[in-house]
Image 1 (cartoon, rainbow, N blue to C red):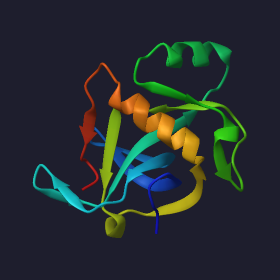
Image 2: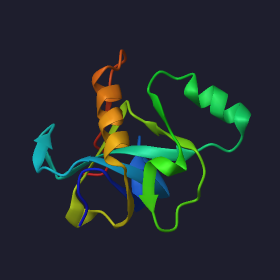
Image 3: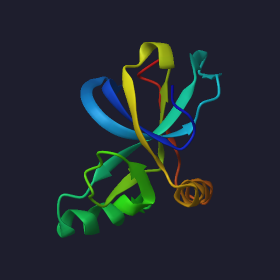
Length: 132
């Protein structure tokens, strides 16, 4: 099972009706609730690595992207690359219906900074419920 602050890999998920596979997420909440009449028990942000410096500059120009370095996470087999968390995209999942593996967790300090970043966002959060 996963808990708040964990980094998980979701093997199959949807975004805007498109089937996607194997991607990392950070767990924001593991509390059972409902959204739009659908039950969920995990809320996550998607994580991505930078491919190069040009992509890094471009991705960090978006106000909803939270930068992260590999030393801000505790992972046994991490890729040791810097990246970002799409803080304005909330993915809702149901643990029983989601094929995922816990691969690590953010440091407490980094998780707290992420939550503060989300609270201070000046853009709308997108709720992605395709996976419920």
